[in-house]
Length: 173
Image (cartoon, rainbow, N blue to C red; front, top):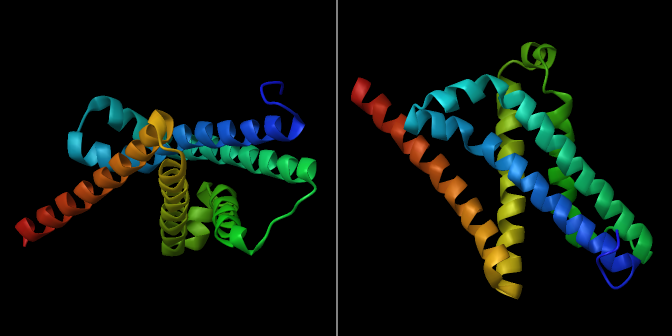
């Protein structure tokens, strides 16, 4: 990879950058429904049917990040510890999400499909949020501050959409 002081640092940088790339693929998937609901812009409506493809693109990018983590562990001669349990659960949910992102699974799983994808999406979001919050607290800086700001903004959009739906339901009754 060639940008660090040695192979282990190169793999660490590769790991960090694959996570950031995956995060930028995740943001539209996580916020598209909320943005479409709140803004009603033609561009958002055009992307909505492509959400599954966007999600699979994120899944591929984040699984590349997992491969980068495995390469880093191999380079360092380390392995996962109990501290990594939450991340491993999130990756398991991601694999389930990718594996069930097809029409057959939607029909076969019924309402459970929506629950699985909702839980997995929020687990993945939480993983990004907690990571960037910790990195910002530890290192500060514009990069981690920016990533944390994007994560908080995505969360606030989802919250605003939730209350908008709730307000519309109350007005309809």
